[in-house]
Amino acid sequence: MTAIPATRATTATTPTTAATAIPATRATTATTAARSDANPVLRVPPASPAAAVAHFSASLAFHADVSDVAAALAADGDPGFVVLDSRSTEAWDQGHVPGAVHLPTALVREQAERLLDRSVPVVTYCWGPGCNGATRAALALAELGFPVKEMLGGFEYWVREGFVYETRQGTERRAPDPLTAPSGAVDCGC
Image 1 (tube, rainbow, N blue to C red):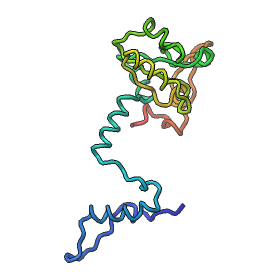
Image 2 (image 1 turned 135 degrees about the vertical axis):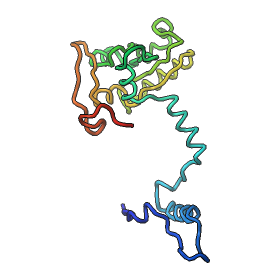
Image 3 (image 1 turned 60 degrees about the vertical axis):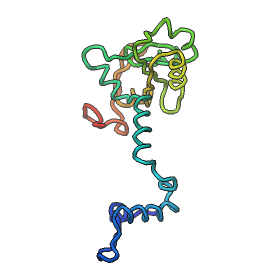
Image 4 (image 1 turned 180 degrees about the vertical axis):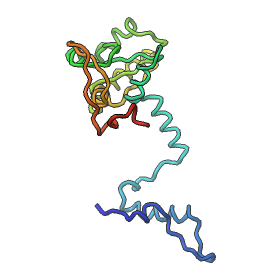
């Protein structure tokens, strides 16, 4: 991999004479287009700002961050949502978010109406980023008419960020993983 010098990466190259001056936006676009043939990041150009707003707004409507869920649960009063662990009983016993409802994905269609209030948003989670159980549970809940979001990172990132979790033996907490949360900080600042 070839590193791009900082000056090339952060500034547009434009002629300085009045007769040949190119507006910085045109020069930047031309430079980006020239680099995109060899640059895998720009091979597919970025979406327009309007398309990006639509995409990222939708993403936030469908997903919740582990830190945001933890902060909402830790605040005084009702967080306005319920957390749902969609993993197996064995996984639940190994550890789960305090206060979560346990409803394995395979049982959502059968038991959601009995366990959940349709007027309260549900935040689903499973093991972690490599597991789509929370996505499948969220889909089943949405098909049943429940408002739902998926907690990004799942139980893995809940534990890795240093939040308290419950097991069959009691409450536990691990030190935050410095790759997922800043050491000694209250939150990540995102």
